Length: 400
Image (cartoon, rainbow, N blue to C red; front, side, top):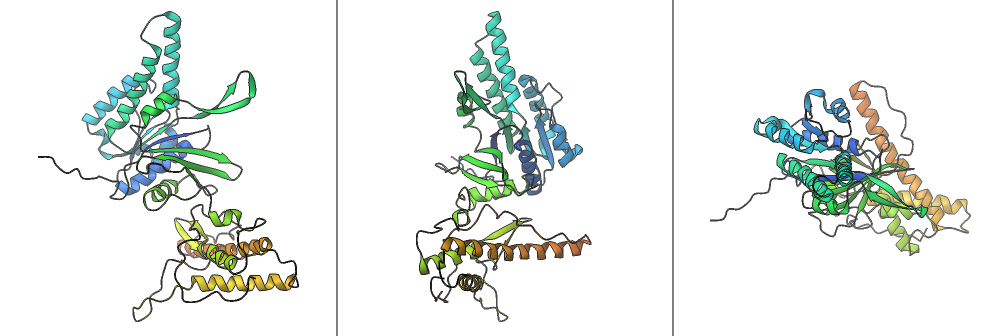
């Protein structure tokens, strides 16, 4: 009789991440892998990491997770068959019992080695088909990843490919072929791309097996964050709620020319919602400008109180709008200019909440009080205009 198969999610929360991570050189792929290792060690209680290091960067793992917790094969990392044999032996000897994460850093060099062998065989006329060799080599890599049966992180690269006839015409290409990429989709359940621009580092979640039809989305890393909070943010975005948009909807265009397609009272309601839902993320904690809009306080008698965030946001809106109107003498009032002032007032309140938290934390630890927060970027995952807590208080008043 058939049996029921029980799901075995990581720590009872998320599907086991088997990640294909790609991106241009120097965009933090190894740091993201290390962050996954740290996050999984805390979640599963297995502190060790096994690194297949073809890039010579296993020492970076050891520096963070500890030498005693970093394992790597003795075999030549570019000799896939030798590494496969060693991994199988280690599995039989229970070397992987305390390993919580497996990283292939990177497949790019393995694929290049196979391609070079193909060229030599083509020149000498000896050996099997070059394409067959690459296919077997890459399939063996996937077989090793699946054999260890652990959360895994497999790294490739993205490069520019040039049109030899027009050197200015550049397109992106993966460091492995499209054919191998298609085969790999049978193995991994997440594809992530790292990147860096003028604003800093970010990741793009490209695909998720458990979310078919997923629209890619971007999450930015805070300055100096080393992607340390990124694994949990990725998993929460994918499996605990709808994936966030590439940027916060409200603040992205808030205050530019015509911030919303409506004016008057409707603009006021939209603006208050955006102000109320704005937060800054620090140490995994959301610091809202006007208090958590989803939290209802409890009265002394145990009854549920009324969340004051909508009213606090409305009061700030009213003060800012009134000051702006008086400054302009009630003439030539522009919603874009008002919006920028609302943003500034909201962000200053959120920064004040962060500063209070950091000061208290420093005092408890006996450390120097940190300097004031200097306009940090807003957290990339924000609530939109929906989901505003119900309140019996109307907005009242005019447009401004």
